[in-house]
Image (cartoon, rainbow, N blue to C red; front, side, top):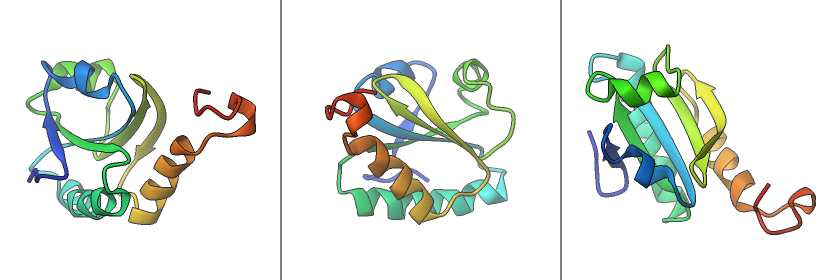
Length: 119
């Protein structure tokens, strides 16, 4: 269930994909009904952000190493990465608005990080 707006990641390409910029990663499995609901919401998030952040999915059954390294114990789990570091963890189905606002907070420089978005 990956589209042109949502990238499918695996154990091999994961680190490179999250190394730069803002990346939202959905850890999911095809047998998980809530994960399918979250997948549709991710499409909406990708459209709303128009390329300001990458949106990706990791099938936990196929990329067990990455899921274990990030201590994914329930799905869907969504991790928001900035420059390779997981900075936000959300568990369970999240709304479009929650995801978009979480990403926009990371995209907007704040006074506490010197205004350069590098907290």
